[in-house]
Amino acid sequence: MSGETRNVPSRLGGSRLRLPDEPAREDWFAGGLSEAIGGPLGDHAVRPPHRRYVTPVRIVLALACLLFALHWVQKSPCRDGAWGDLKQYKDHCYTDVLALYYAEGLGDGKVPYADHAVEYPVLTGLFMGALGLPVHALAQHVDINQGKWFYDANAIVLSLLGIGTVAMVLALRRRRPFDALLLAIAPAMLVTATVNWDLLAIAPTVGALLAWSRRRPWLAGLLFGLGVAAKFYPLLILGPLLVLALRSGKLRQAGTTVLTAAATWVVINAPIAMLYPDSWLQFFRLNSTRGVDWGTLWYVGAHFPTGGENAGLPGFGYLSTHITTLNLLYGVLFALCCLAIGALAMFAPRRPRLAQLAFLVVACFLITGKVWSQQYVLWLIPLAVLARPRWGAFLAWQLAEVGYFLAFYAELMAASGTTVVPEWVFVFFSLCRLATLVVLIGYVVRDILVPARDAVRADGSDDPDGGEFDHAPDVSWLPGAARPTTPAPAPS
Image 1 (tube, one colour):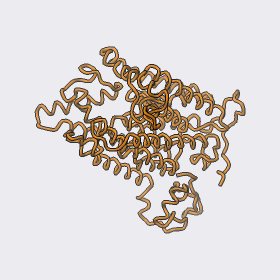
Image 2 (cartoon, helix red, strand yellow):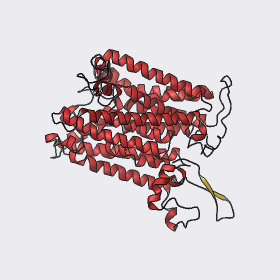
Image 3 (cartoon, rainbow, N blue to C red):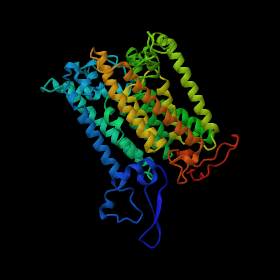
Image 4 (cartoon, rainbow, N blue to C red):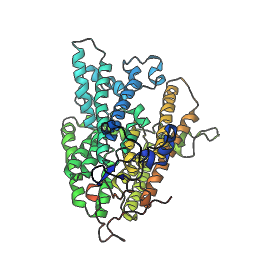
């Protein structure tokens, strides 16, 4: 959904009203799809009276509600916890939320960290306990299926957070409300929303971007701190924030955000770290010793069908069994990616938008990392929508993610002793996921290098998510420093 808002004559004395972007008019891919129902709506078409009620914001929010309702239906076969005969894989409805209710001791009334070393950051562990312990207490007096009650409670809260995330993207894109439609109908969100507790971190992270865009750096820091306390990935976004602050001379505001985020994280973590240090360290120990996960670049390399007796590309098998070396290698690769992104941010002809850099850093973290769980796609969807609200490449990537989702469940069945498809099928869909994400990265980099191709900037905007960065001049010591200008029309 690219392009610009359209000005049309008002019925009230010739003043001009700004209408929201219509994807079928502004995006070539969406426009092509609209031909199946008669093409885009014309400028002089009769607009029905109910249009005042059927607004873009209400359409997007209604579709978001529908998506999470359908997600609950998709996961419902697994809600009873009766997972005999690999039902959770055959019906593609497995969720950590239900499995870990018992694995983390919540079903026995164990308090996270105090009685059991939870493998997640503190805010996620506390959230699990806040919902799980009341369910266990209720089960002592009422005959209920504890797992089902726990999953449903989590599904309600996580769905509300997901809908809230869509609402916050709408708030970030008040002049382009249909951009949020990509998030509201994302196929990968439909199948992975409650596989784990990632929405617990995604909602405050998007909230932090919204607060920053409203020039409230302390609130952005508070929300970033909450996000990092739930999952570590929001920490990656603070790097782009600081780099853009360096280019724009807004280090004081960015410093406020970073320091507030750090203080928030410490306040949440310190009590657990002091009272239960061994339990608190469990998350860090697990990530340092964890091996190569399914679907990663390293897994693909170790299982690539070379046709020889020993499958895999040279060297990858060694890395699968030498985790310390693997940790060092993927750390170096990610650091190199960050240096390249930092150079792009500092020397691009026009300062990149915050969402563009945030997407690039998180995407590179997943591509180079040794763990790329199926639900990690949720980290990227809101950032991709804000970075590049175009339909074609986004939907290609999402379809690749759905293909990977299906192949992953076949792989889980094979790991459980029931082979459904050959190993090369899973490797193929892993490569599709990787390739489509790399293509999306390439488009974002191109938009940074050629700002006239950036859909968000096509109407003369600079960085609607940038807050203090929006229309700020570059620092004087930067070569070619200048105030951002309106880009030329995109080449046809």
